[in-house]
Amino acid sequence: MGDLLRRLRNEGGSVRIKVTPDDFVVTEIVSIDTKGAPKRSKYRIYLMEKTGWNTLDAISSIASASRLDASLIGYAGLKDRHARTTQHLSVPSRYELKSRRDDIRLTFLGFSDDYVSTKVLVGNRFIVRVGGLTGEGAESMLKRTQEIRRYGYPNYFDDQRFGSVAHSGDFVAERIVRGHLKGALKIHLSEVFPTQKKAERDRRTKVSEAWGKWDKVYELCESEEDRAVVAPLLGGAGKKNLLFAISAIPHEAMARYIAAYQAFIWNEVLRRSVRDSGTRFHEVPGKTGPYLFPVEPPVDVRFDIPTVASKLAPCRPEIEHEIDEVLSERGLTLADFNVRGLRSRYFKSFLRKAWVIPDGLAVGDPKPDRDDPSDVEVRVSFTLPAGSYATMLLKALTVPISPQGCAV
Image (cartoon, rainbow, N blue to C red):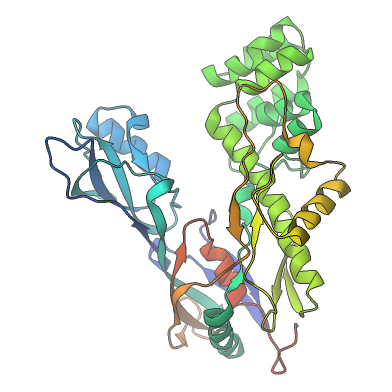
């Protein structure tokens, strides 16, 4: 979610979600056996309940309290700090996890031969307070709920996926695909983001100003990771050295860049599918393009869209054609995603459902809004499969609909 207070457009006003952590409760669902034999199992499995911490910072705190390296702790997904969340952790069985904080609680579940990762993640259960509704808005949500229970909603990647996108809208991954390696490195090393501390923003501004003077850029690097990226350029910015520099970008950062660009292309294909279906739709602004939500039952929702790579996962011919069209408009082809000279192949294609039907979707009775009694609020509960966004479902639920079912 990112921000402590999020607002969604709704007829008659601004819809509020997540004012306090208890307004957004997430319970992770995994498939893992915790009844292994203590002396023979490879991992200990824990349940972590946290409030006010993001997942990585909470794991860092636990690692410090347990006197072990944070890389030994397995987890399945990243959970926001502005929420009350429950998720699973694993650690090699010779270690035990501890927490010194009341807002990070650990419960030992048992032993397993599996470790916690995205491979065991089934989904997440959500309970969300939605406030700032008008009476008409609450009634509209109830109507939308009935429709979404039956047909689902467009399974877009939400704005959280695009935190690595430059202010200009440039994607590091697209620059790499185009062969603009120096530009990709500049975004990685010098792009300034609002979430960064002032000292880091100032340092990155200096890196941008010194760009091309590699010895100076190297001096401005404060982390070993950044120095490893710049080091090949000290011998010149030829293509070979640029490829070495790109290959030195930490795996986690590169994974974010690739995921953001694949999500952008994927969203664009789904947008066009909705637009071209002939179904009336409502636009909700997004960081990398509008999200289009049909305001009447869609004709066809049972199809998958693959993420882009040089070799696509099998899909409908019309979907593959749409991907080709999107790439063509950006001056690219699928073959461009086979970037030669990198140490590993980053782009992998996987199928993702274009529409998702939430399980157990329920909207409670409207009542006076806790923060503004002139408005109303509701509690929304639902379960989503791994990789789907609760915020996107909430956007779909709050799409304005007129009494005749037309987009407003």
